[in-house]
Length: 221
Image (cartoon, rainbow, N blue to C red; front, side, top):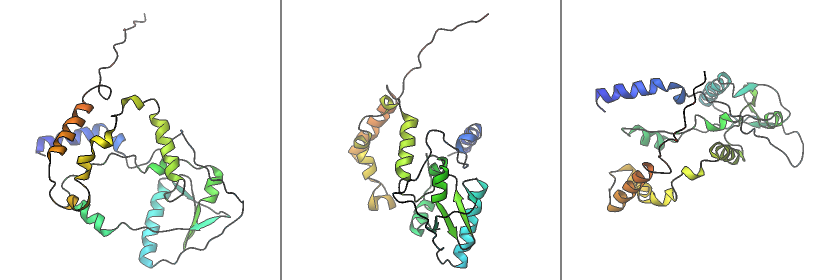
């Protein structure tokens, strides 16, 4: 982008800075609960971690405490904390990109609150303390379902504004980014051009894009 375009982008981001926040919100549409087939206490010991891993865990846990995603507490049911580090290959791929675009909920799972029972059952333990999650953690078995349910309720009533068979239309474009193609130059085929033009036409026409309803103006005196 040139300097003028960069300035416009900065102004746009500044104008809508609340929409680009890294601080997760809190939904009122759903609340995640956990029900066990047998009610029993399970107290697990923390996994052994190296000093380097402990330092990473302490940093991440402090971030969650600051965001009020978790709280320090005791529970009669605890699981060991698992540290999952991002693969270096993925980082290298992203770092080589000239432009990165992301459209996503900020820490989507963390926007879903937990019931008191779920907080007790989802507690986790580390070598330096026990914590209770206040929001839905990553890694819970039913978390993807709960998140999908929330998104469905959020978009309920908007079904008629989707592009029908979007994935089929976009298939040539998505296929060109799979496998080895994503690491090298993209071969822009006739099928890619046709898919691009069709999607562009769908995005610029009804029902995705249409003129607002003209409502009569009412003057109250």
